[in-house]
Length: 122
Ligand code: 5GP
Image (tube, rainbow, N blue to C red; front, side, top):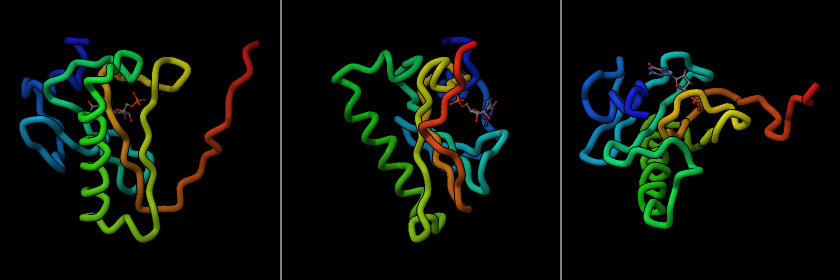
């Protein structure tokens, strides 16, 4: 996890191209390979969780603050009227690629995708 690119962003060892928000607890930046006109990732700076699997009751405030930051960014970017999507992928079957907790904010267009889709095991 310490090798993860998002861990390096959190620690300031590397900088994402486009930062949308930063304070002492959270960092929000544009996804390098966007799936929507707006695709922002929000990460904690001081809590090294691989995914929601490692979340404890002590992290509820942190997760709330990540969601609230996404809401404020969506408001700022004018996404609220038409709607947007907040997603957290969890683990391999959840489609998570980067092993450092992150919240996706996707918007700016009608989003497709049936959330119930799955690939049958062979
Ligand atoms: P996951 O599939 O783990 O939920 O999402 C990881 C996201 O991180 C992907 O949407 C991917 O495009 C994005 N990503 C991966 N590496 C980088 C990077 O180095 N910089 C930025 N800004 N985004 C990245």
